[in-house]
Length: 256
Image 1 (tube, helix red, strand yellow):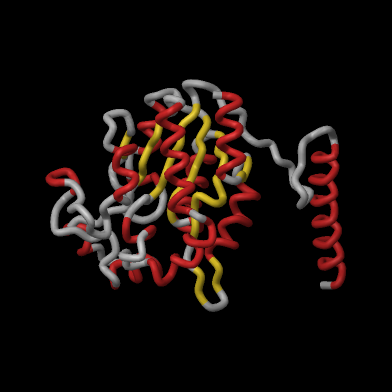
Image 2 (cartoon, one colour):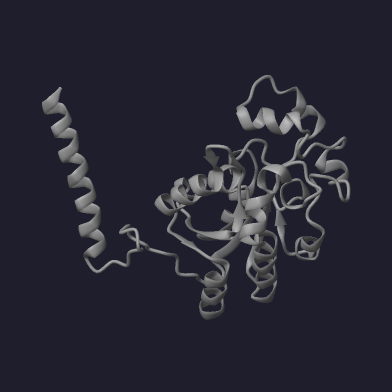
């Protein structure tokens, strides 16, 4: 057992020394010592993807506000998402919305994870109507934030089918991106450690380059559980880059 522990420790040390050496080999790195490859934006190949820009997550009137409100307020999430939507229109960048929505037939699912049960318990994103029949009822939980509608309902923004758990595997977000030859994604929205992170993971697995906008997202914070901190750790390790909204706006103005 002692020899096994020594072997594991040696392998771990070699792994991290290799990471450090690779980062030091002329590659840009962050203050944490990890490589920071970033994403170079290219006109016509770059999209801004926003997950769940909806009342239930982002408004004090939403049912999830007691869980996420502190994080949303601290990050300026509502305002920062709008800045990304605004510059998408100004620079003719594809804006894709991946919403969360439960229609009546979804409420008969036979099993689900902890947060799925929690969302169903507080009737989050629920509506009496199907999205493909009448859309979101105005000003209800699944509806888009009012200040975002002028950017979403502009005839250019792609609104994907609703995802039913967290990731884009159950909707057409990836199809919307592929059909437009997008390879680079600026990712923001709600919530950081659930839908946004799940989209990040799937996008990376699908071969996209992804830049996460860290203050245009937020997450639930509970006793002994900080969803936002967890998401930022994972985003830093998984994504091509993690930036603030202002940093992204500067880069967009420079490259697009």
